[in-house]
Image (cartoon, rainbow, N blue to C red; front, side):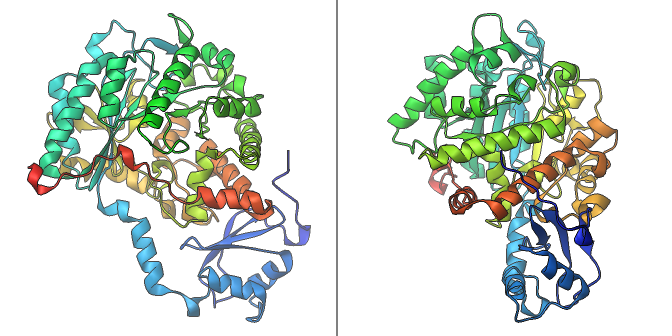
Length: 513
């Protein structure tokens, strides 16, 4: 495996990421960090360049000459005060921060806690199948939809979670139909997504989901021996069931004439200790099943994962080593002609190379808690996010915002809990983050901070969240720097948004009212 770091001479080693406060006043405030064989420099607009040791020293002492190539690179990336594209940059920043003015667009409906699997790391702390008291009622479902439609966001995504949402199938259907009925007046763009283990799927359910253009997402934790060992199912092989339904659903998308590399069941793995030594095997398994993307997900400290950490957990260094090996296998697949995307990298390079804001709620400042998403518990209680709801399953209601029977939208969104989440996740208020070279593209999770460190604000220097994203940014930026032309081309392609418009329920025209 290629190394992502090369040590610079000690004379210019500044180990801490920092904000350059002294130096060339012709330049906007900038941040820097040693990455690979150079210094990465960024600004608040998202502009960035790599410079060598000599140029960095001249940058520090203000002696960089305007006829040097480095100066031209600084001009092109909006570092030079005299040459700033003020109107264009203002419009770009406003577009990137448009989420601040639109209200929550992701609405997670926990329609039941019941599940027929006993996943060893279950983040949701599921309930057994006989606990029908954890099913969302039709009345609660309707009031939750009413609350969601109070959001001024022009687009809504309603995502069904659990437990296993298919265990409360009638309410899933009712939410879809009721939402479409409301949207005849609201005229928003609406998407539905179902997160399911697929074990309760049947042909009638699939026909309905395909007809209503519901995006189907599932978990695939690796080849059968790994998947079935961590995702326990008393009725047989979970792996055989999930991959069987994945194939059938993907065939339906092909029959509909949808682009085969873009429209697939959204499968993602939760990386547990058994997978650490099998990065290449995991990628190959996804590719062999016809998947064209993978979202490598670290094991979060929520739900049962906190108690099974000794068996399934690992250090962040181990995860980052795993991620690098998986990444290189994905690049190898692309070299061999298979269009395959690692979604974490794609989200990050869309911010860095594409200067886009993909609205990934974990990497926003402020984050999405309360202002980008709301979670609706089966009993009608409202939470800042699904992770906040997971904390509540352990008896801590810190992230509860109220109840759909009693709470008003405006008071809830402008209330103290949401304000606290916004303040805690605004990077300018985080001492470690404010001077970080990755600030233009990063974000923090107050729920993760609270779970790991007992504080919404946390201590980023000691946080595994920071360790993860600092490591990922370092690695990906090293590939931008050191990768060959083909690899950089793949990253640039990943930076281009690819919309799945088929799943979008377009706002009906006035004749539909």
